[in-house]
Structures are given as structure tokens and as C-alpha cells.
Amino acid sequence: GSPEAERAAREALREAIDAVAAALAGQDFLVGDRFTVADLLVAAVLGMARRLGIAELPPQIIRYLDAIEARPAKQRSDARNPPPAAAR
View 1 (cartoon, rainbow, N blue to C red):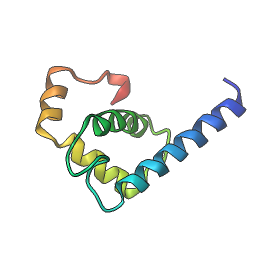
View 2: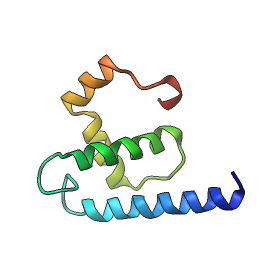
View 3: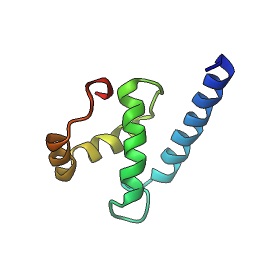
């Protein structure tokens, strides 16, 4: 892709990260007070961004991802289906 397209993609990712950080202000999960599919999907995308190092993540997003990674179901899932080596 072109440098302009890369810049636009990084800006869009930054805006999305900022929106998630704002949504997490004062709470542990995105929707209500429990883990939902919204957390699963958002954490998958932000986790990939973290593993690839394509965006700087604010501390509250890092804590959010760490908490989701520590969930027993996530640990079992990763044990059964490890992420590709390139994604780690």
C-alpha cells in the first residue's frame, strides 16, 4: 500500500483504540459488568495489534488485554489452538 493508505490505517486504528479506552473508563468490560462477545472481538483485534507492535496501547488497554488473556477459557483455547508463530 501507499504511505498515505498506511497513515490513514494507523490513524483509524488510533481512533478505534481511543474509543475503546473511553468505553472502558471506570469499568472492566465494554458492555455492562460482564465479559461479552464484544470483549472477545475487540480483544482479538487489539491483541493482534499488540503482538505485531503496530500501535502504542494506553495502560488501560494493556490491563484490559492482560485480564482477558488471563481468563481460564482463553488459556484453554490457546492451549488447544495456539496462535500462529507470526502472530505471537
